[in-house]
Length: 284
Image: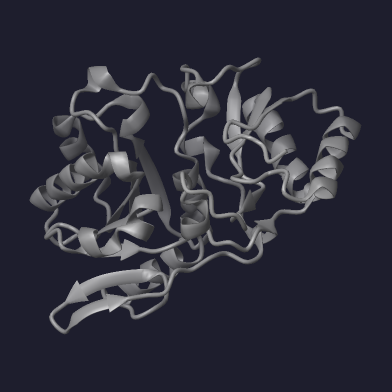
């Protein structure tokens, strides 16, 4: 199946894109899971490169997706729904699904929109391929955890799903959004070297800070990759894409001090010569 994954912008005009700044890491990870399941993913990053409705319609006709997935934060919602509507105008029979942070929390609101067929709740690395398998069998309404949808029989609300073994996840599909194609300042912060790539070494956070949705979206159970698996991915990024700086996206990278130190020492022992940044901050 052809799977089109979209990071919506927050403006309608191409000229108001977000300066080619930050790759859509969640979609890169999801695309890798889609590819691992035997499908063909494609990513359109409207947030960084701008939205042009005419060009998007041309993309739909050329790629002919079997399903369109849209992700994003709350400030993306207007453009999420605009992209969903545009998709249905061109391909009315193609399922349009929404996932990500906003969808996990506001799934009931999103399901009321006529152009949204399903909403994913939680982490979709494992659930989305299951959904694609159901579509291949002709079942557009699989009653599995992690998916909410409405049909003639009412509304199904699946429980939030979280990945337990992060070491088993494939490397994100960086070939779909090469690091050197992003020219702005990632996350609006400083940087030292280019090209820059993002990496995720853990998910979840046990705390409940009032300004943060991490515990709601990714759960209060902190799950993490082994240092060896993290360094393996860093080596891959450096070898395949010439990456010289890594931005760690974890919500709580330093929760386990010994594990963070082991990872840093492993980076040094491998002589990776990478600049490291934690744009989400550190728990000191």
